[in-house]
Image 1 (tube, rainbow, N blue to C red):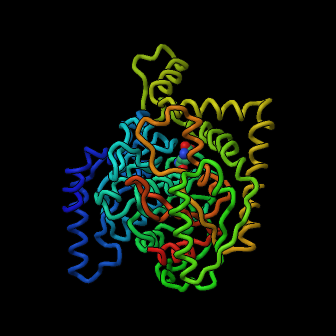
Image 2 (cartoon, rainbow, N blue to C red):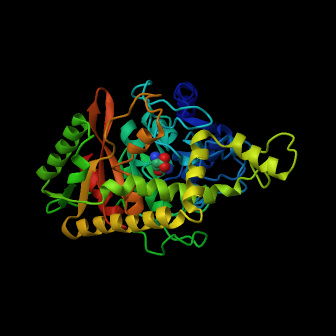
Image 3 (spheres, rainbow, N blue to C red):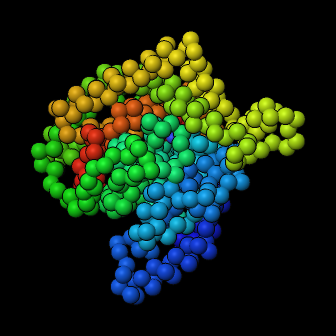
Length: 445
Ligand code: GLN
């Protein structure tokens, strides 16, 4: 009731929710009370949660921030939604996001932009901007996001919360509307690493319905949060402290690193030499996969359909032209172009080779250090409307995107403020090092 009231009071100002499921939430809260009375409650029983509107929720609108799915009630629950429900959580509603998770500011949503609770003239980051803003403003204790190129970590940084992108394959993607299937990963967004650990405990694990979901045991992420950090080897990628980094962000990150030194960690510079190619490679691979994934939205099977089509081709064309926003159409055009005969090798195949080199950079670095630290974003949250040019928006992703290309996990934790806007420290680990990342993040908090 407390959170539903908060959503009612501030939800409209922030625009962080697309759908609020108050009745179902109250019912589930009653059931949680009963479980508690009977002594059958588990750790997450009754814990309220908000879900990015990219997760399918049975019988509940699942829009993915798009006009295309404005009329779509999903017929089933995503695996992570099902798992969290079984653990007893209470879904408060579905949060706003950039359309089909394409964006870094939440300004690409069909439902309008979300505002940053720390400063209503600033963006909350994207694409999981609604989830980040809702957690930061205390409209929910935690939320789910997805991260294809930074969409959990960057909004977490902009809103001063903690957000974890797990290793690719750690969490099932079943029922999560696909943007770029080889990069997408769901993760928790919460006020602390500890809360993220409890959520990941439930979310992680094998799922026969997602062939890329890895069959590997899930440790208890909460158990190792307090492991001492003495002897931890931290690497600072020199490419993450170069041109374009806001000096105040750099200062906050270096101060955070010195806190780790005082906890017994050692610090050294490392190099990720192909960092420079991450944005171009990502903005070939992600749109290519998106153009393929989004071909299912044809105005026939589900979603938006234009009025009075003259024939089938007109129906396809106008349903997609009217149902998708500008950024989504731009990416479909880029993706179909780079996948087309004659351009495929020059763009797509080349980008895949670059991706391999980027992955190798990280693996080489993790031969020498345990974790990498740097900023989550080159600047704190920028003003709403400040980045009209798509390329300047893409450049925002410089520190987050390579992580998805490599498939490794990353976490953003709050590390201070500049001009009243939060700054995020990003910590990266090798594949399946979530327990270590959560431990390291928790020691800072
Ligand atoms: N900003 C990136 C993009 O627009 C990443 C988005 C994401 O992680 N979903 O593609």
